[in-house]
Image (tube, rainbow, N blue to C red; front, side):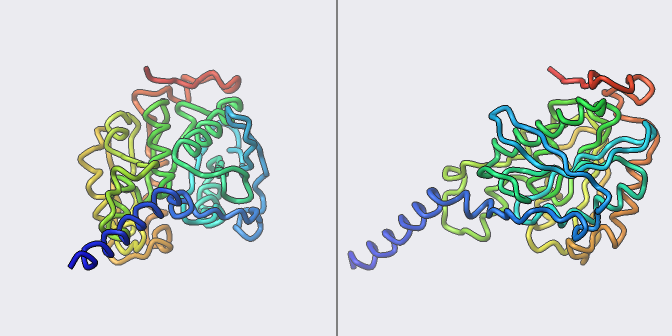
Length: 288
């Protein structure tokens, strides 16, 4: 009888120790393949670099907007896909006349370093500052985040005044996202990287669009639906039933996105295009 209790208990303890010690490899499997712009469908983009506060050099991929007629979209990719999978999104936005910066994060797309929530949040801020130095912020800056990138984008939008925020396949928290795949683990006490949306979204003031494929197999759409009540800014949602995540943009998401970005007026809390100066990068508004 004792062995019948002891063996499962020891197995559970080993399960807990395995996850606690190796969760970064599980949560953020590195994909260090370098970005090949032609393969991603964005051969006209330029390789650019920025540095974090700790001195980590990161490579990203940028195509400036022509003039100051349209804002620039900062794209923050998710944790399980190579940045090159954001190529169709970057192509759609660039062809519509927007500036686009596809951010490279630690451990992705040939970039050095180990991934993690704090590390990626620092990377996202470094790329936003990269644009500030080029006169892109406030009413000229739109944040677009996919998967974990959605929570990074929301975190930036909670700190800085931006024109608009787009969240693709967001989720409530990492614990809720993983609980079906890792049953019997006390995830809320084990996770070092919590990615909790509740404490962030209420602080966002920019008009927000949530895109989520109804047939998404990685991030259940129900987790995204729970976020609607947390958003206090003007909110628009698009969740087509039965559509796979890879088909979201082609199955109506692209049209919804462009319409949202082309809507007249910037965030009422942030500077408009007319109020900003075209250079110097000093139009950044950081909310207290």
